[in-house]
Image (cartoon, rainbow over all chains, first blue to last red; front, side, top):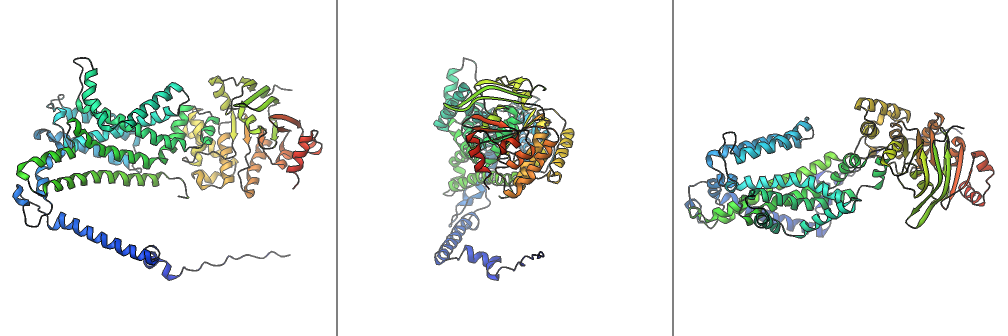
Amino acid sequence: MSAKTWIPTPARPAPANTVGFVGWARENLFATKLDSALTLVCAALIIYLLDVVFGWAIVDASFSGEDRNACLKQVQGACWPFIDAKLGQFIYGRYPEMERWRVDWVFALGLIGLVPLLMPKVGFKRANVIFMLGFYPLFAFFMLTGGRFGLAPVDTSDWGGLLVTLVVAVTGIVGSLPLGILLALGRRSELPIVRALCVGFIEIFRGVPLITVLFMASVMLPLFLPDGVNFDKLMRCLIGVALFASAYMAEVVRGGLQAIPKGQYEAAAALGLGYWKTTRLIILPQALKLVIPGIVNTFIGLFKDTTLVLIVGLFDLLGIVQLHFTDSTWATPETHITGYAFAAFVFWVFCFAMSRYSIFMEKHLSTDPNQ
Amino acid sequence: MTDPVIRISDMNKWFGTFHVLRDINLQVAAGEKIVICGPSGSGKSTLIRCLNRLEQHQEGIIEVEGVSLDGSSKNLESIRSNVGMVFQQFNLFPHMSVLENCTLAPIWVKQKTKQEAEALARQFLERVRIPDQADKYPGQLSGGQQQRVAIARALCMNPDIMLFDEPTSALDPEMIKEVLDVMVELAEDGMTMLCVTHEMGFARQVADRVIFMDEGEIVEENEPEAFFSNPQNERTKMFLSQVLSH
């Protein structure tokens, strides 16, 4: 019997009305009568909302002026001159104007260090991490607080606005991730005392509102400290926020740890790797990658929770915006909403950036060809 | 006879109250190839997993190359770096490339330099016939290729003994042969091997001894020829008639 040569049937192009924009619209927007109706209703809604927002923020808005008179028009839109006049306050709070360059330097150096760190293709990661975790915090600390190297001291009670928001958020983020990882590992530990301590910590901090933690940190804690021992209120809030966030982080990370198959631990053990090497090289890289969405979710929550420091008398961005509503120079019907819109927009920019970066990292780190 | 590299005497193990291994006595000489078979739940995987303490035995003595598995972490470390293991589910590290999978333990456990470890890894990847896949991730490989990487990864530690825990059971039929071929070559090179498998052809071809387990006991052990042609025990006969019937 002679073998036949098998020739596969050649592929044919797909029908024209199933590909391209027409095909996409047909499938996704107008597949059924109900789909078509929903598409039209939603399109109308989107157009209406855009019209409202655009009209308020641009068309009817005031853009320049020195005081409230600029914003008292017949048709009222956003009062942007208010933001313009107060921008310095919103960014720096009551940080002395002569010293604001120090804050600018801290912002600028932070950006210079952070951007290449976030870009996977840029090298020198080790040096960059050492710079950001070793040098930069010291630099920021001495620059912002002053009192050394010929810099005038600036009390933290004068800090405010975006500066406070970023200081609290960044310390919370940088502190909560490693602490959360340790707590998650501790919660899965085979040592009962370590486990009990971690479970206790996590459950206590998750079980109380952040406001309570902040109150404890700012009002109660000094009562327990010996006389003369006192540390800065902002510092106490930073610790409170970091501990609070780490409890949430621990549970997110634990979710990732539980998703790692037992076989990974066994393979590592069979190769002679001990607990810490296995954890660091095999388990955490996989577990953290799995829970990137949850980690970033916690970061975003933390970022927005910074507004609660207002409760203990620190003025973050939102707090300082609200504070300036009382300024009679700018008392207009649109001041409040403009201020809130501005604060909301700033928060949104940061949170959205984190969200997009998380999606980018998930894709970048994926080694699974089926995703 | 030279001293055995593995000596198990009167070993017992329980999972909770379930007596999973009963009075196991086994000695394995250097270079010997042992195939362990038996119905599922008979304790054969547990037995070889006790040899590098992925499972802990509760009674009796296990010595590997003269070092006792007694819970001392120093002993365990030395045994694990001399005993390679290949799993049914491959258990490659999915976040690392094939090459990184192979160089990880030599670098972190044996303190080799990256260059040394990579040279060694490439040599073993050549040997399992996938040198060109070194930079891919496990998820991009077929099951047979993944299992051959797993073998190469274990070999990179230069083990004296290799444990195989049903290495072909999770593979598509087309891929079983490529893995068995690598294992046969390894056997021909003189590696001491303990292999839990249902591949009776492999057992006939390679094994010095075949061990049949049931209910946590070693029921019968013999040279493959005698084991297959003339099983002594009733239980063995029944098992063989099941697995060899087609």
